[in-house]
Image (cartoon, rainbow, N blue to C red; front, side, top):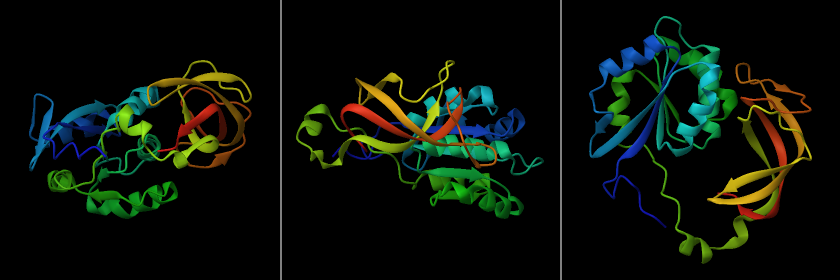
Length: 232
């Protein structure tokens, strides 16, 4: 298995997003960022800044897919908003497991209540002043295994059909039973969405009936591939 990138001396990737440009600017002014690098103990993080707003969902998803950790900044004046829930939901769907919600103590109860439906057990809710110590010790992603490692791996974690959350980013709607090209571990495969169990409202987290999936919508779907794919 590949080593922790922080142990190898490589720069880690930190996604930082906020509920509004003012909150983002205030946070960056309070952090010692030099040339897009944030140092935390023995670790160095490359910063990826994503502004809030629905139009940034595709940028947010792309940045989160390679991030080792994420910081979501709560505006001190606006408090915890539906936008914070949307940001948290998209970041978690893309596999980020170390999430720091920068919020003042008075906002912590509201943040806990809003985020609890997401089932995120490893979200840290704390003032921004606690960020650097957290970044110095938080769990980070492992580098992907090489193709040679994968060839020798146990194939029991593979399947050709399963249920999963999906964030749809194409301008054209997704329709069940149509064939689509999916990229898995760098390879392309044909996939079909065999059913949409429900769509998720990113601001309320309500589960809604859906016959198709439009741009920036999230749904829990059944998906089938022509060949088995690795689940992790």
